[in-house]
Length: 256
Image 1 (cartoon, rainbow, N blue to C red):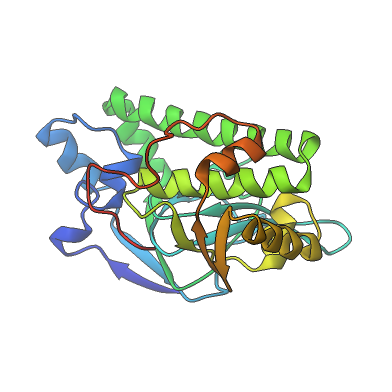
Image 2 (cartoon, rainbow, N blue to C red):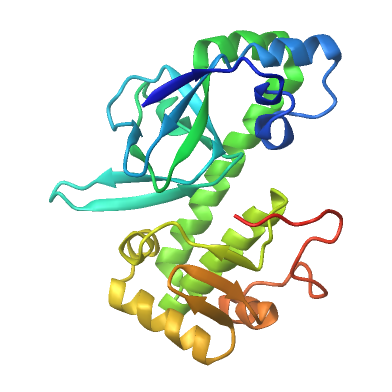
């Protein structure tokens, strides 16, 4: 791991990805200055490096500045169960708050960089800025809701429904961050995707091929293009929130 000081204006919390997606808008100038003091260093990760390990004491939570990470849990028989994938602007380490230690391993799926938010400093500042504390509660609530939906999909959905739901959810997360949401690279392997979805790697490959043959997607290795969004929503059994466009229209989309 290579730690880097946040000593440039563009790395400040209020103007980077944290300010856009993790922290509340509408803070006063003085509050923004206080928020900027939260992030004093970052950590650079190469592919396969751990950000933290299960059982490590909780000192910080982290926001992904760029790259992609996975969180996974080691089962008693030695198998690794993937429990989440984390994109720029998303926070890791929240599972450690209850027990005071991280409940999973966090590993970079590609070259990545995360902002370090010292948890004790965050708690002190949140007490001073109620809107910051409220936003943090919303983030935790969103994480819980996401976990509940994933558990529901594992318990009630067929393999093709789980995969369609994952692709759509991934698309929505990219769209919320200003990226092109109907065309992207999956940084995780088929094995990791299968672990997360609770299906065998052979089933993952077969379902992706079937989706392509049905005209729902185009696929080339890890590059995915969503062709028939309505069809994917129908397959997943969830309503399409936007039946008119696949790409956000308000701002130029970015590739990830």
